[in-house]
Length: 507
Image (cartoon, rainbow, N blue to C red; front, side):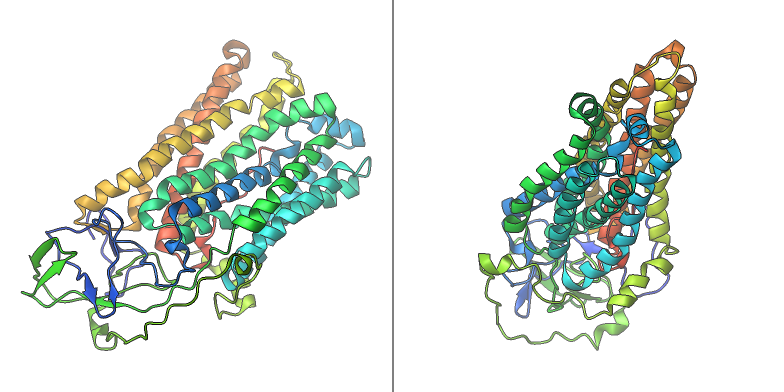
């Protein structure tokens, strides 16, 4: 595999490993075997991974501008949805006085909300695997609108507000769990880096900017309007989701079987090269949903049973605009719903899932901890901040999230392309992991710096703790992007190819 990536002990196919760039030092891939040619990008040098089908309804065949508009809409509604969890971070004291409750009961408004996110996430991921994601995006948006209007109108009824928060959590779950997977549906491997960074910025950045606005809204027009604002903006986005976000899930058929030619054969590649191949022939095929790789490595013993099938040249008709508006357009998997519902539990012990949860969850946990102690540090002596000023302290982490987005967006694809070239044109999902080195730097600087300056806030003031909070959040975003890209690229069909992160809340 090269570049420090260990070879698999078994000779079976390695999920995610794929040939992306033409390279003269490795066996050439044939441009055309049978009826299905190898497809390249517009530069004629990058092999498309995964290979798009001939179906016009395949999202990979849609124009890039259309796919980017879909992601922009999903990212925008994700910003709105991500504000739900930290919605009460800046006005906890106000609400405790308003409802006559202690801080523990006010914290339960967020705790039960997160329970709604977690439970609904398991159900929605299984539903998305079988019926696609569009119906869940529509359902989530509608639930956000209803529950936010409900929460604002709860008045002095604490129980009513509590149940509104639970429903808000259910509405948030599709965007928390599925948007990263939609990036995998819509884009080739070489296009995903900056888009994955954008989707993670939408989920994390919105969470940190919320307290900045909520404190001012609560002081100016009342805490109820923090709920009403979400209902208004989500309602404005609902028509965009309904009309311009079609189903992104697609059943990719296994219709190609490509081989490396026998030793000594001269194969013209894309009309540009004529390489002589050495070494034993190996089987290659276009992948189905089992992974993002176009030409995944397979056991050489499977050569005899993978003869290239002959397919009729039948292309499905392109779905009309009206047909694309349907919430459902057929099953995406024949798997049993209840088995999919339970499958994530044992998969928590899968090394890739455990790694992704630790990479994201560790810094997310510290971020939540900082959010908890922030009010205690600045509301009391020696600075005596009010709630609006405390809310403004989340400006730092919001800027940190933006910084993490910019760095990960610039480096995710650029660093991967460099390693692909050094690896003779072969892509390994492990190339995405290099971003965690920057997570280590940013995260440690942020955590140690915040601890030192927050302990002596009278000496250092408010700026340095906020600056180090920004570094910590920037590291968290870098880790989230790295782990999400690795999971999506290496384990595309697994239930954990959806967002493996722990839900974030500044409370």
